[in-house]
Image (tube, rainbow, N blue to C red):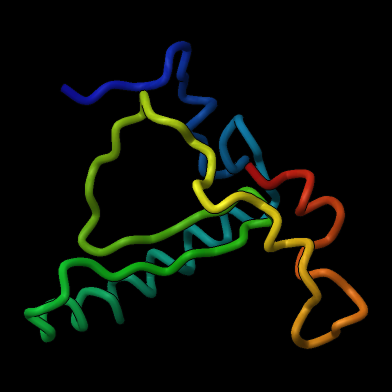
Length: 112
């Protein structure tokens, strides 16, 4: 049976503020634009390529992370909400400007 994190509230699922664990100012925009992209691009690609199980777009979301997956599937909210890959990659040299890291100090601090 699926469940939610203990003490999870509507505040945690508020798209406008980006949730409660690591809210970001850009999440609402990502949600709106990515939802349109999922309908216009991911759905037709998924329906056309029968060998594909799911497609997704993954965003840095100011370090907090966000994704849109098609087809959507429910996740078990009792699990761990942190990335299994860690946040060290955000400290690596930016390929477009090797003097800077990939993430800003704020983004790295917000990564979980």
